Length: 456
Image (cartoon, rainbow, N blue to C red; front, side, top):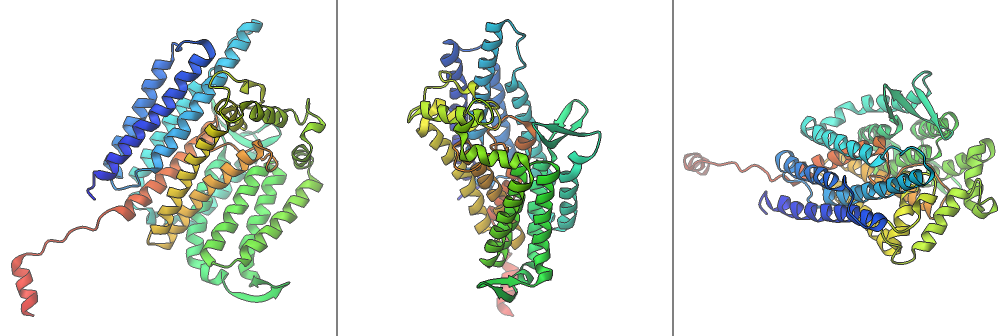
């Protein structure tokens, strides 16, 4: 395989990804107003420029990396941009009908964050020349993750939105530092488990047939469990609490190969869920909405009920882009963007988006299985699991498979924090993929040296 072959495949797939995303954007305009909007051409040029620059960056900085991962990411990202544009048009039409001032177009901010995400993607590839460098900063990453997680609780900079204290203000910008905590936690756990994985696999006793590690080795999982409870209590963030704890349990299980860690994690998760349900009103409300959404369809259950109605009206083939009513769902451009897409694309279209997520996760897991060092294996597995589990939590809540968690759908939802961090995770996966796929250097041996070796 030549060095250009994977990049040639990637170029074709990136063009396809851009065509899918730009086609969806144009169809939104045609479905809403019957004509292409004035700003659509500019948006298509911007996204085409991003895709072109992305390919140039890959050919320059990671020419041997996986050629399928990024095109799948681009498809999902651009479909999210198209749906945010769809909801912008609905808001503009509603404002015009009532004589109110036109609201700000969220798609412009989302495109800005896509550009920022791409810039940081390139920055990570430039700064991190070898993924194994990150292992040196194992405990630094852990400390940074804790600081970022607790930063919204600092008076003066923390913000509470919709009952959750997740945001910090930096001048005119807002950021959700818990998103960056995911990267720090995965890097810390990968480095820590490379050193302590064998100790965590030691079994001293059994309780009800479940092998238990030594108490001093059980300490880390109890600390992370306590930290997740702190997030739940202090920040009222059920989704992040569940995500961070599950990342830890899964990575410990993979590092040790001991199924008892899954049992211990599941028991602690059940205990935490019970404590949250009994002790915190917002957790109890979310469980009650999940169990009985139609008990109060015009108040507490309104969001989920409208989501279910949208899924039902979409059917198999959807109402068509621009022709449904996704704007009836509160926070449709962030928490419930999956329901908005499912209504207008139908079950088949929604399944296609899920397949692109499956491709992203599968390529990440493939990188994890091929990488030669344990740190890279655990890090890539952690990143792939973050995307998979967060997608499950969000879309599972939208479809009423599980209670709502308040997380955003990776690459799809409106918001800069999640989008930028996910692009940085993709950069680390790409860097690792490039390291393991790079061909070994060819060492040329002169005839004279070869003759000397044979003579010896």
